[in-house]
Length: 394
Ligand code: PMP
Image (cartoon, rainbow, N blue to C red; front, side, top):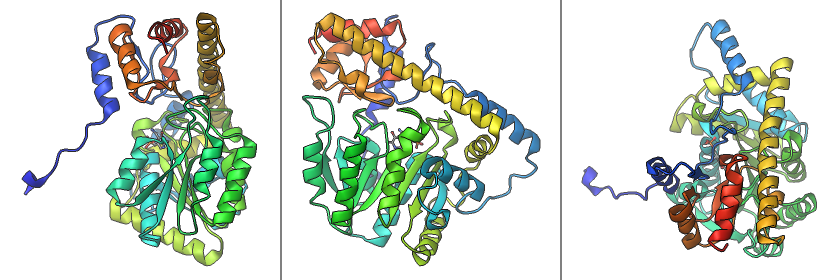
């Protein structure tokens, strides 16, 4: 029977990683895969994570199943971290998932269960996995304009015009902060306008928040999400702990569903547990336990926040250095957007041919759509990248 299978497109980023590995040049620079790297190119285990793991190892006396929605303490801690006190806890249904990807997948499945013909509005561009999961689930996708190729900021007028065509029963997917792949984000007043469109159209928002703490800070990065959930009757929020806790392989995420009333809340909670049961039964626990331990211990939490600030500061420093270097070399401000973008990524906004030229001629590896992982740089490689960008005529 398996001869009937059709081969699936290979993951472009993974293919790029392999090419990078095979490149013998010493000055090569990897700006491809989306993981944080420190100045030495390592993705370290955070101090608080190590300490929490030690505590867990010492204290844990069973590894029996948790609950279908995971440990309620994890949900409580994460809801507080992401949503603060924006909405009453009793209105938020939540289920632990394998990573943020699991949360996104379960969210789309919930949408499809609730309304099989729902359309999902996604930014153009968006994280490619959004599109591939939606396609896999046979959910209709409506792209909305997002990135302005000229300014490398948000095409806000285009975005608004497209979102206004949504109606009740549609879902509008938004990146809570640190947009992947562009790095271009809405400001506070633009978020207010998006909220107004949601209220006017009656469309249901879904927020994917995978980089809280990587942009302007833990609370600043969640501010739009918090305001939005408090302003609409219902909302889905898919949160990932992979980046801000640096626990990528532990597969730690939480799907939250905010309900308008208690009856809807009970149904949401039961649905989330049901969906977990169908797909993988009990969610992974180790990463969730690490996160819960850190968030509920004042000293560990303070240390985690301090290290996360170091990570955020390092990325901001690289952005500023790169924007400055490019200003110096080009004698223009046209790369100023790099300092304004937030999060791990920036879309350079150039053609696949130029991206290829950067790779072939200079050993600089970025995704074909010109997404760069800023954390793949260090203070030594910034000038190399800047010179290469000017050399290929971007
Ligand atoms: N959403 C977005 C926008 C992302 O960039 C990522 C990470 N690449 C995720 C969700 C989920 O990541 P993970 O499954 O590793 O937690």
